[in-house]
Length: 422
Image 1 (cartoon, rainbow, N blue to C red):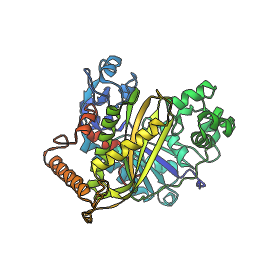
Image 2: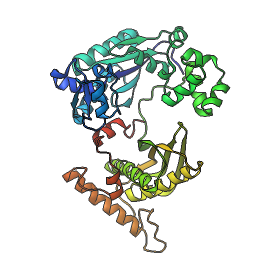
Image 3: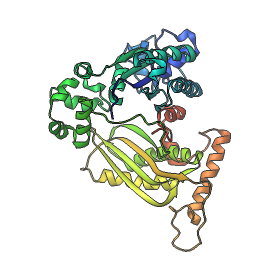
Image 4: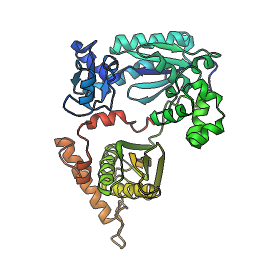
């Protein structure tokens, strides 16, 4: 339930990847910087605030970023430094309170209701966090404080760059109502445009619309959630630890008609990342879920629960491909897709596999059968070769063809939630 005071904090490192590059190379400070990409191609992974002022954004082609900002400096990512400095910032937060919920490499929620007697009111705690992260880590961080997680996150976005906003109890409506709807958690360009088409551009305007109308406009689940957020209804608590429940990956795609080879390559690449991360942690999962996003913003998910936990790349790819086409074939002919995602849940430790008797039928999806064991052995050889010679040294052909060389694998893994972090 919401706290009595503004004791839920959201701390978010500002323009994190670009800020790290400016920290590592003082000559870049105050200059427009893009991580990744380049004038001749590739994709911008992140941009500094100086570059954002020219319209440069993450996900933008490098040539377009260079055209928008001729003085833009392109740099390669220092991925190990991102992890190290992100962890250092989280250590500062945990010095304030053990009630820290890390939701990505560069942001976290805190519940400071038990720390105010030591460090003062939320305003003082937020100021302390900003000062310590700046002095001890060298990076700017913005902090929002409110009674709910949702509003604390909105406040931190309003505070950017390098600021602090505290929404005191009783002032929530005055704070929320004038804000643009895109500051609500989960409102992307498609949803924003649908709301704008109905004359809804601010949170206050959205709050005035009956929930049933919003649900008809955006769908029941999305409409219900956004109506609740517009009224600052968010009962979620700060969760300090989570079980390692699932691991997933997704890939946005240019709007296109789904083709067999294209879908296979994309899914193979996603599964390759998911399966490798499972095996690195000695885990396997029973439930495979595929998400397909269609043009217009609608999504479809399909899941299948296997009889035994699996971490074999080929098996997970086969399951994912069947699920994806099940979702695609349910749509009208000609439907275009814009994203594919794969996740594996109901995970459990799997350091060894009990072999089964060599009796027909030999289901390759069961890891203890002869074909299942063969798949596991191939994965082991691939993992060993990658450990010794690098991730690009060897791989399954569809996954290799599905790689996007413009986005380094290290960046993808940093951007995705790790096991146990939700």
